[in-house]
Amino acid sequence: MSKQDKDKWNKKFQNKPQLLIPREPSKILSNFVTRVNSKKALDLACGSGRHSIFMASMGYNVDAVDISSIAIDSLKKQKDNYNINCIESDLDRYNLKENYYDFIIMTNYINRELISKSLVSLRVDGYFFIETYMKSDFNEKKDSNDDNLLKQDELKTFFDRNYEIIFYDEVENESYEIHKMMKQVILVKKII
Ligand SMILES: C[S@@+](CC[C@H](N)C(=O)[O-])C[C@H]1O[C@@H](n2cnc3c(N)ncnc32)[C@H](O)[C@@H]1O
Image (cartoon, rainbow, N blue to C red):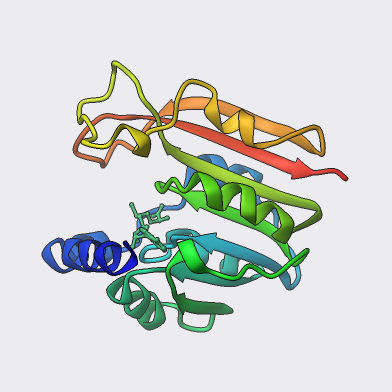
């Protein structure tokens, strides 16, 4: 599967190099992140790194992980003076550091098993932000694989009472996207 995923995403970035130009970070995420001094963040499936770059600009030391060598190479060229560790790896087999990160981000990507696995990586008082596509009649593009879309309220189900839900919503995707789609967004804080 991993070779297939890597080829699929490399081909996509090769055919559409415009996808490598990092867009603005999620507005919802940027509303919540405050400037810090050398805290640690993990950007899961970072792509060309819009959130890695944003988090680094806010003072985080970022581990940015993606399976696509093209996306990771593009981020390496852009990261300038920022503290971003670019990691080309398949997240299905990635060894997460325990009790290590202050902020974990997963956007426009869904890997349910990884969400659960990542929780051990989050420190107490740390945040987990997820923003990705959900099933909706509003969606203009139908995904060939229904599993790629979240079910109603699904993001809330990953977090038990050790986590406080700071924010949850269902929102339209960004206006620059070709197809209108609904997303689910959650920000939780690990309290125990
Ligand atoms: C739609 S992009 C999202 C990029 C970024 N998170 C954002 O919101 O701009 C999805 C990313 O998931 C990565 N990806 C897909 N499967 C992966 C896997 N098994 N391990 C790591 N990255 C993966 C792709 O290479 C691609 O960069």
